[in-house]
Image 1 (spheres, rainbow, N blue to C red):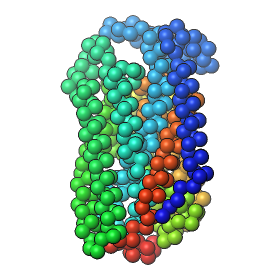
Image 2: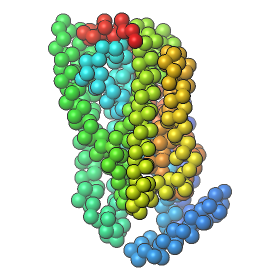
Image 3: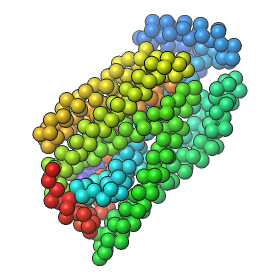
Image 4: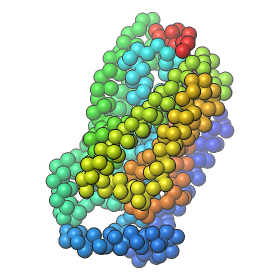
Length: 436
């Protein structure tokens, strides 16, 4: 059984406290009036860039008779959105790490994989964050529907009334329907996690493999449910932030990002537990396979990124390319930089088979991948909510620290609830002897 040390508790709670202070500072310093936002813009070091961009926006505003919101009010909403967006990016990022791990776990169960059973409890520990993460997400989305922020512009009746495109989607983009769908997704994912974990622990004490068979069946069913609801979740929670834009690849793109992040955390947590004297039956062959998945899914992510970008850019349809123009012009460093962290670096480091067996190579690459995919979600969300009024500062770092600390505590605490070796699994012996 894993034991949660006092130092880990102190560390995780320290991160949460510092993170809360950072988030609180973000909300405190956010503008509470248009006059305050104008003062912030005037004192911003990027004032020259903002001014040029403002002229472009104002010119477009004059041409658009249906634009009912002044530019100053628009900038005010962007600045007031920043702490909310910082909180949302971090909350969603760590929640999707847990969900990506759950999908990987279900694939192992449904495919009857022989190499991975020694890692089941590690995966179950990471998915322990799913339920508290779900509560945070649903509360946040409900607060959005109560108009405490302006992240989802389609929730504003005035915007809908004067926007033909959003109005045409109002049957789907409806606040009550939005929350109902979110509850449906979260309920399905959490029910699978609950029963799968229950059957997994019960199998340790069982004299037959009935619980193993149940896990196989519900995992296969869950994957069918997941592939649909994950895509819909990505449309609802991320793509609808920019309701004029859409991509048929977006669900897969979000999946690839959270999937590789989940696998990376599995590898990092496994290495940490081994360094503490646990998981003695996990060998370098298991780590090699995890690193191989990190390598392969990173390339899969890059394939989807390029496909989405290239097809939209080549078609040059105005309502589609605006998504990338905004990110290339206003977010050029994170937009292009994430290609280095999410593709080039892991590709060069993990391409060598021997490096996939060296712990510090895996840890270094894993940290870079996680940073890169946080930036990926940052790129998905921030341009639609804060526009060019962005930078990574106190609220963004505070969000990462708070949810990182919460994630570490919940995951490691979950590991203390059951033996780290699922000894009753019929494939455990095969996994123990696994050689690549």
